[in-house]
Amino acid sequence: MAKNRIDRRALLRGLAGSTVAVGAASLAGALPATASGDSNGHLIPRGQMGIQLYSVRDKVAQVGFAAVFEELSRIGYREVEFAGYTQGGVGAITPAQIRRLLDDNGLKAAGSHRGLNNFRTNLEWELDVAETLGMPAIGTAQAPTGNRTIDGYRAAAAEFNAWGAAAAARGIKLYQHNHTIEFSFAVDRPDVRLYDLFLELTDPRYVYLEMDILWAYGGARKYPGFRPADYVKAHPHRFPLFHVKDGVPLPDPQQGNSYSDVEFGAGVIPFAEFFSELDGRGRFTYLWEQDTGPSAQPNPPGSLGAAERSYRRMVELRGDR
Image (tube, rainbow, N blue to C red; front, top):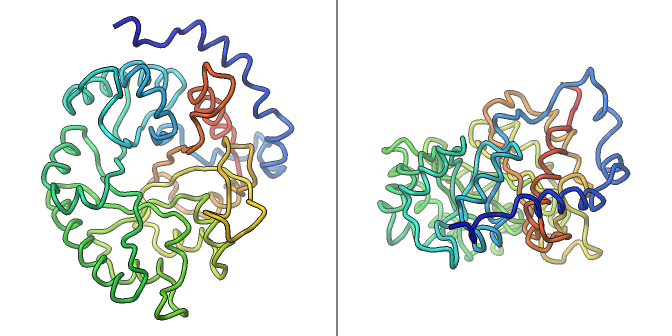
């Protein structure tokens, strides 16, 4: 068991040496002047700060959930979103065992990303696992469908409504997580934005959304004509979770998701402005994510160093509310 645990001394040495990766200068450039004022309030409640485990997937595979959960709890995270229920070569683990590790480390499961085919073929098992882990929500990071026509989205919405009703019957919310493509336009109706169509066609009682803030800004850059915060302001109860992901623009706005993700505080996304516009911040769960976390240097601590640095900067984020 010891070989699967993080070497705490090596980790702390790595953290001490890694603060140069996102220094004070880059943070000052990323946040407005109000961010440092003691009179301004915190924008992200600490008790609702979490992490999408995809950000530290390399560590989960190397040392397992037990060691990773211990480290995340030490950093200060209180919620985790799963990206799978396996731990690489560390060994098999059951949902019940994962739940015990969450409880032992004072963590809660906020949700999980699962494939659409999992819902099509094994929905009840997925909901069983969600119940075991104590998840209030379960979702997918896939687009509702690859068929970007009106009829394609109508069929996808019908699927989500059915899955969401089954989840709601067990007290669980079903959600969809965006990339940029969902903000594009229907190929057979270039005046219809697909994200708007999905909101319109899905039942607000059964289908929710997790806004990946970076990719929403990417959508606004690639397919202009909207502001990400306006969706949340118009439908606050449909957005229980955020992916708090920072980034820098790619040279070509039409490339990929239009941005490349970086550590929180090292990018250009106006989080203070975004969160300051929202009412009732206590209803949201704020999940840090960095797709490129496993490439963070130095390693160790690698992705866990990025997790700690990003957590500190999320705590420091302040605004005018």
